[in-house]
Length: 484
Image 1 (cartoon, rainbow, N blue to C red):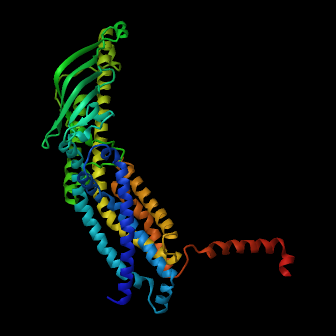
Image 2 (image 1 turned 90 degrees about the vertical axis):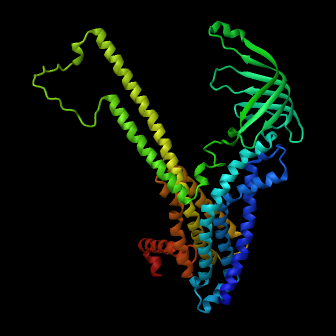
Image 3 (image 1 turned 60 degrees about the vertical axis):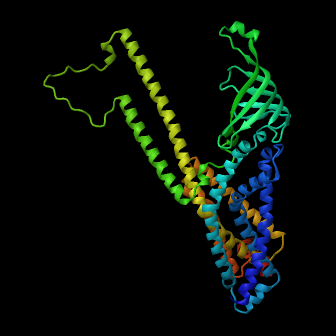
């Protein structure tokens, strides 16, 4: 390796490492902010918090790595151009491509590492992260309930005045609101003097044993006039056991990306195997529904031809005229019921098929994303390196502005493409690669202009036609002044 290659590689590595650590720390703080409700006020020791953060760190890499490559490239080549080191290289016959050669090799290796990381480390960490959130409550039951506030746990809202004991599992002053399954159902309130939380790490059921309490339950009378009296049932107990399903603690809104589905826990081979099963399941569902609906409406696969020597009478144009008024009414009611039932069946199956297709699209997106992160490192380098050579600015000023604008554009297009593709608006391949396809011409353009020592924008190409236009207008309307 020549001295120039060593110098460029060392400069880039120092800048890249510094930027990566700073950005990684910033995104870790964002993760803490997202899950602050699960960490604050839960009596968690430092070891559990560290494990929580360690399992959430790998999911940050797909965001931090391309941005770090982009910013490091702009800063490195911007410093070289600002200090006239590029001018010295070019005067010695060293082109921009020659200067970038050793860094291209490094980015190539980094892309392979990024793909390996996305294919092996991130799925494992995602699996551990999701299960760790559930297992925390099993290993430390008191985490599910904080003092002095109502805690949404499974099908219950639980409030305790004080927690005590070694693990905070002894509760004092317990108030429980049971959630109704449907609107308008009975509401139940349970109050107890104290209680004990018990759990088993091998089970997802949290047992709450209540002592010396009573419960109220609203009763909805059948007669409407009796409902104004607001009747209720009250009962007391010496001991009562409530089982709480901790799996509810790990459920989140699908529209929020705090936790992805199971597709984020799979590598490439597992995703391909799962996709094969999902596609077969979808095809079987379509075939089964088609056969079922055909049988319901009386359509057969192969019509049965019945030979008969007897000549049948021709049917009238209005078949209902063959029946009485009562029979007509029954036939129409039956037909209306069949149509309504078929429409409901079609709409229900259509929604189910859309959900299955959405799940397939999510798995396809997760598959393509493992390759997108590797290509994004290449793309950001070929945008950042020529851009730094063109703007001739290093440091943390203008390079950060350009890097943030480019990366926000990349991330916005990538997020938009994935969302649209998951809903079936475009193919998952196009949704995942759309950001790369859009920014690829920019990388080619910047590399071309930096190689030919052109500026970021060729103002002559804009001003020259305008000046020529004004010159022609002046010659036409003011010929005397032009002759002078």
